[in-house]
Length: 121
Image (cartoon, rainbow, N blue to C red; front, side):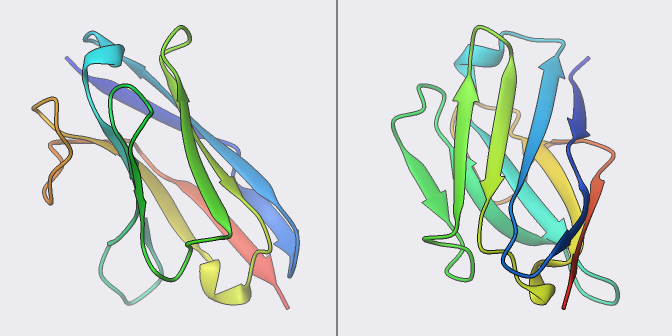
C-alpha cells in the first residue's frame, strides 16, 4: 500500500521560503513520477509541480514557475518542493501525489494527508 507523508509546512512572511518534503513508502519509489498539488479554502485542488521518476523532467503551474522547484532523492524515497519568494496567494494545504503508473498524469491515485502553508502579508 502506497503511503505519502508530507512535512515542512508552516507560517512564513511574504517573500520568504519553505521546503516541503514527502516521504513515500509501499512501492519502488524510484520507478514512479511524483507531484504536488495545493488547495486553498473554497477552491479546487490545483496542480503545482511534477517530476519524472529519474528527476530529469519537471513541470510547473504557471503561477509558481520560477519560484518553486521540485526535486527528488530516490535513495531516501523522498520528493521535495522548494518554495521561494512566497506570496499570500500561495497560502493553501499542499498535497503530495503519485500516479498508479510510472508516468505522471492528470489524476493521481495516491495522496498524502496535506501540510498547511500560510504566507502572511
